Every structure is written in C-alpha cells, then in structure tokens.
Amino acid sequence: GNSVTQMEGPVTLSEEAFLTINCTYTATGYPSLFWYVQYPGEGLQLLLKATKADDKGSNKGFEATYRKETTSFHLEKGSVQVSDSAVYFCALVILTGGGNKLTFGTGTQLKVEL
Amino acid sequence: EAEVAQSPRYKITEKSQAVAFWCDPISGHATLYWYRQILGQGPELLVQFQDESVVDDSQLPKDRFSAERLKGVDSTLKIQPAELGDSAMYLCASSLETGRKTQYFGPGTRLLVL
Image (tube, rainbow over all chains, first blue to last red; front, side, top):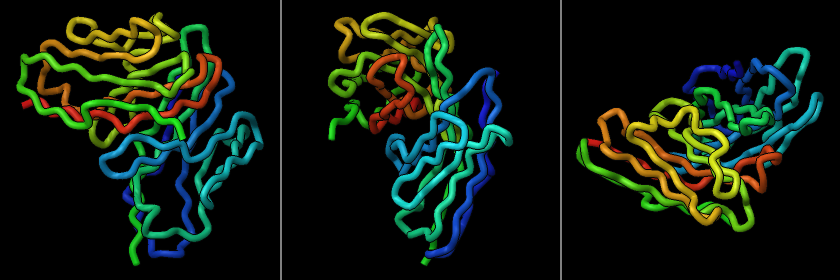
C-alpha cells in the first residue's frame, strides 16, 4: 500500500534558522506529493506541491523537490519566523479508479522561538 | 479567495447521542471528501463523493456513520450513536474533479464525545 513517513517532532528552532523536515514515501504507482500546514485549532492549508520527478514546489519561502530516486520530498526553508510555528504534513495522492484519497504522514510540529 | 465552509466549528456531545456536521465545498468543485483526524495523527479518508455519488467509503464505519450529498453540492456527515472514540477533528475537502489531485480543506469540526 501507500504510506508517508515524516521525521518526528517537535522541531524547535530559533528565528532565522534553517529548516529541514524529512519526508519519504512508499507508493504503488506514480504519486503527486504535497505539503500541508495546520495552525492550532484550524484546518489544513496547502503549502506546496509537486506532480512529477525533479519538480520543485515552492511557496512563502518554503520549498521541496520531488526525488523519485530516493522517494523523498523534504521540506526546507532558509530562515524561519515565529509565525511559521505549526504542524506540517507531508502527503501523497495517486489517481485510481476507486478515488484519489490523500495519504498523510503523522505530521511534524515546528516551534520557532525568538 | 473561495473557501470550503464547515459547521459547527466545535461540538460537544454525550456518547450515544447523534451528531451531524455540514460542509459546503468551493463553488464548482465536483469532488468532496470527509477526513477524520485523531489528535496527533494525520487525517484519514472516511468518504469521497463525485457529485452526488460515493466513490470511496471503504473506511467509513457504516454501522454508525453516514454521509450524503443529495444535490451534489453541500454534504452532511452523521454519527449515530456517537462513541468516546469518535472524538476527533472532522475535515472536509474539495477538488475540482476526481482527476484533479489538489484538495482544499475547510477549517474542520472538532468533536468531543463525553
């Protein structure tokens, strides 16, 4: 089956530090990959996506590259802010005749301190 | 910017009672999803609709959960009777059509069963 593995949190960083959140996947087929962000008490917001190998998704200073050879989609940001504190979910979707559900990782909590 | 609407945002109920959640997808989105997110975990799909038809309800506990999308627009998810283990965040998402991979989420309904 399909699965997503994320690094465990919480990840605690100082403001302006470099961020990496690791994500690897297992998929039967060719998935599209996503990062979603969830702020406390809220739903999920799409952060970025990539639909084919070597694509780089980017948004709000975050970026991730679809690496088929290593089945990875690591999230990076060069300089984090306190406002980036949230839970980040890596996810994949494969289109099938039975639907296209998102398969999520367990989430990684990021805490950014002054 | 168009958004997925959900209500209520919070619901507290006693076990054995019935609860219902409502979702209005982004206008024009044919595909609607209900996910359940247990605290500390990633969301898991309960049911997917294409217009008014169910595409995937393989993970829906059909003895107590039901979902409908009668006119292919808004949707209702019902639990009867609620159990303690149903305490979770219930997220609704929509996409333009099943073939489109990007899903947009609403703010969620947080359910607490006492």
